[in-house]
Amino acid sequence: MQKVPEAGYEIKGLPVAGLQRSLTLDNLSFPFKLLKSLRIASGIVKDFRPDAVVGVGGYASGPVLYAAQNKGIPTLVQEQNSYAGLTNKLLAKKAKAICVAYPEMEKFFPASKIRITGNPVRKDILDLSGKKEKAIEHFGLTAERKTILVLGGSLGARTLNQAVLKDMESLEAAGFQVLWQCGKFYFKDMLTKLEESGLKHIHLREFIREMDLAYAAADVIVSRAGALSVSELSLVGKPVIFIPSPNVAEDHQTKNAMAYVNHQAALLLKDSEAVGQLKSKVEGLMQNPELGDALGKNMKKMAKPDAANAIVNELEKLVK
Image (cartoon, rainbow, N blue to C red):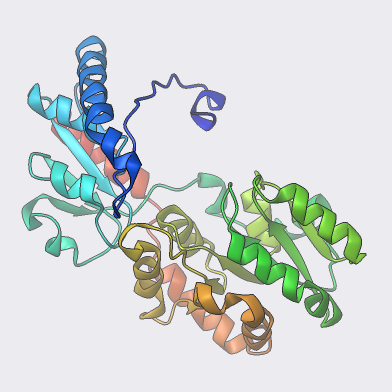
């Protein structure tokens, strides 16, 4: 609701919320929120009169695609993860095309509708050549030190932040520097603790907008394994340590990460083991440049840089 208007696009919100997997009081209001959202979505589709409708998963897209399908408007579902979400599985039955980022998605969707397109990513990361010097200057880094980029998403990731806090002193002492996106929920607390430490080579950011420069600066990347993060990192082609979030539906981040780990394209560090083991995992990778190069090359083999165009081509087929 914040980022879309900032990018110059109109957005309309729906009151629908996610259905909790366990029994909670929030689930009691779910049917009422869903019915209201279906009514609003029907009005949106009627007024906007789209030629096609795209859904990218999650409960928010459900009512709009359902309304479009009921009105006979062609729909396209884009499944970003290696494990399909409930909303997409339900909507896929009437969808005309299903764009996926991973192979072997026939276990979730009709094979005849599947198009392996990949996930759309920002274009500025397609070519990082010649950007490292600019990146070092932009973030105030030291050219002589190897850089660890830690990404926990825009909101932050508690485990990743705790892992950096625990190991930041020893990482700096070992000759590394850290470019650390901690997220807005944790920034003030992390900043206070960093200032108290007196460390000079731990560079904290609430949010990094210049991701092309961050990737260009990195020698090793530590990241959650959300679908779009994984797709971006495959284009970057740097050695990656995934720490999947355990707090997502069907543990899909672990499945996303394993799709790369099984192809020797990334390393995995469990969330439950990250605090206390981050330094040893990073150090092992830094001390084995052959492994790092192999991981990066294998990661890049799985990249799909033309995903956005491929999805638009499928949309054009529906409209025609």
